[in-house]
Length: 203
Image 1 (tube, rainbow, N blue to C red):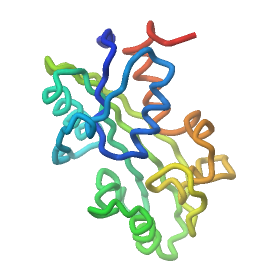
Image 2 (cartoon, rainbow, N blue to C red; image 1 turned 180 degrees about the vertical axis):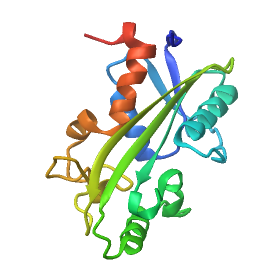
Image 3 (cartoon, rainbow, N blue to C red; image 1 turned 30 degrees about the vertical axis):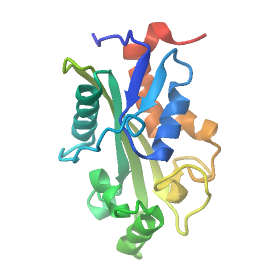
Image 4 (tube, rainbow, N blue to C red; image 1 turned 30 degrees about the horizontal axis):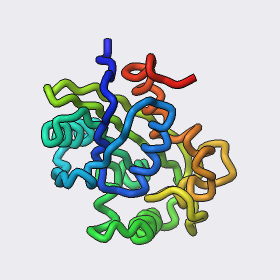
């Protein structure tokens, strides 16, 4: 059985403003104050894991140890089977130090070329760590296809080129509330909330 979160403050271990905003929205129904790692001056650890879960755990543990508070970390990315699973855990690194995701999306499109296989999925791993070292982790996935050129200015990262299965709008065209209902991060959050925050959920 997963450990329940019983505190009132939680560090969100990210320096990505878009990801922080999305996680903040997903945490909104819970009676907890989210504090960003950036606002606490915490450094970003090197992501040396070989999976989304491993990197989320690494980031959550680092933030919990440094802050003395429970910490929630996300590691997520775009997986393209026709590219051998790339960019995968390197999704953010494809955007370079400037985090230029227009460049990253262009690289995906260039490497796909004329390949008719446009299947892709987003994966999000969440890890909730306590200062004593205990970690609970969860993973969500959403299937879809890639479009080019990118469409929409909502969301962040690869959202403008990702069309979820059965949908007409890319994640970049969707309003945040609509995306939150079906996204990989939302699916991982459902598991996290049920396991660790269930009694705290507001009616």
